[in-house]
Image (cartoon, rainbow, N blue to C red; front, top):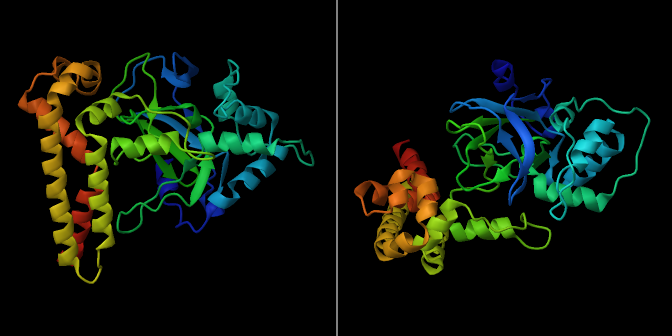
Length: 340
């Protein structure tokens, strides 16, 4: 019942986000092994663009510093099905066996608990499972700026989705629910893919965030088509230079001088567009030699041919510029402030 979800009163903390609604899973979704990727969610039938695939209640939801303690308390007293569903998730080192009725188990009510019963739970295992499967609950403030990251949670079924920087699933948070919709039409056999990180950053930052360090990141390097194409086109030095310009621009923002901010971000956008055009011109031959399959995945037959057509050049330019989207967001924000 979407109207009842979106009419929920403004939130002040994790407890106020809890909604009295159940979970949903599309009949074509199945958890299964995916060659080279571990487990994933694969479609057994066709779905349309925008179709709701998963509506999942949070197994656990709390402020980030408290999430481990909250998960431990839940696991000590939750139903056996919920306990088993949690420990079916990967801890980054192992991939536990998933029973045939895993979807039913994962989607079962998380309100059922064993009153008065407390089981022993390994805290280190819980920490690792949360590290590799937890999501920040993204949200926007009144100015449409991202304010996600403070409240985190674990949504059991969506945790089985693998990562891609060109996701085919978009997730939206309403209360303690995660709603996952298809961003494009998909056929049977397609794997549902989501982005674990913000896609609006250059390839080298995405790789750093995904690989992470001790206790951070997801412990892998992304080999998706987008990363392959961007790395071929935009050398590390140029990518780092653009991020340094963005950081410098952010540091110069003065809310009292919107015209100055607008000028700063306008010049940054121009710099990004020049760099993207230069990078494509300088590295197109490399793209033709090394990334023809990746182009085909991203752009279909147009990219698969890797011919220097205006259409392909425009798509490559948009791809590189999209990685620096905050520059355009800054222009829009400054323009709105100046108009007011």
